[in-house]
Length: 124
Image 1 (cartoon, rainbow, N blue to C red):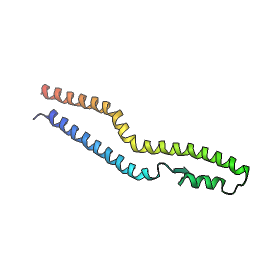
Image 2: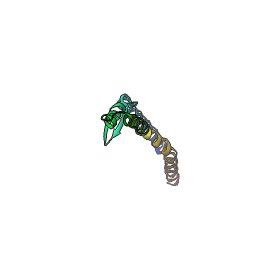
Image 3: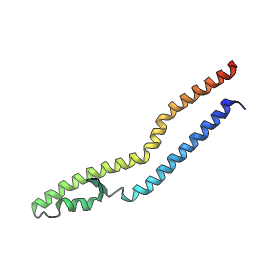
Image 4: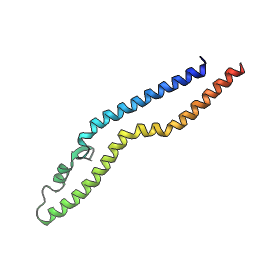
């Protein structure tokens, strides 16, 4: 067996381990973030539900001021909820996206390295 063949096999095994690690990351974070995905917003560094956020913003208001406050708070909570959901999805999917973006670069680097090893072998 050639050194280049062994290196290629080792590269393939490493790639499988990276993919398994990424899948484990995605599974664990999905399980952790899914229960709060539809209702959690982050306010001042702490996670709270949309209903608690609205109650906290407009709990003491009465009359027309309360209706205006509730509408504004719902709109702002909706925006914050979508931002938090996007952040959660990015945290879960980022390693896979990074791997897929870097995969062509790693493939080119590995091909160069294997080609250089083959040339060194042929030169000796």
